[in-house]
Image 1 (cartoon, rainbow, N blue to C red):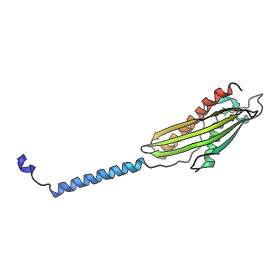
Image 2: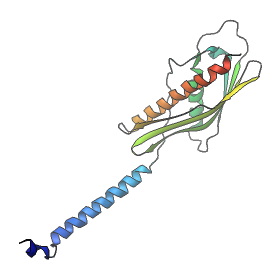
Image 3: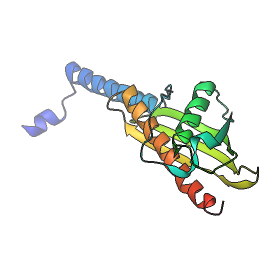
Image 4: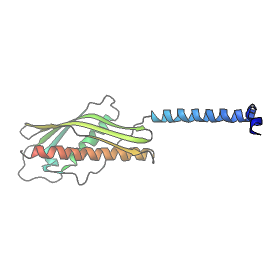
Length: 185
């Protein structure tokens, strides 16, 4: 019986089914390839950074100068405000008795990007910060950078979570890199 059916040509219905499966597979490959190349940007929002702090410098004794050096300058003013806000929130919120003059932080935004690359949202932030004493002496130059990602479970909510995590990591890195430089000041 097997020999009898072995030489039989395929029926029209079975050929149609094979063609449909091939078409579905091709569509799935194109869909996956397109989704993995998709990018998107989010608009950053303010957040509180509690627990990450430089106690030696008061917010009242610090000046920030922010420059956006990114090639894509969308949302420049907002990003400059958020970087200033995030870094200032790591400083002591109370006035420090006996401190005079202002520390100056010249911040260059090298990269600030949140984008989608299937199946996750990525957020990358990279800064260069020059720290000057109240006497205008260069204390040091630091390059905090952070990368965070979230799988796309909540759409833009996942993007915002990735961005918040990267911003918190930048603030933590800022404190970690700046604290040793302030020991001798």
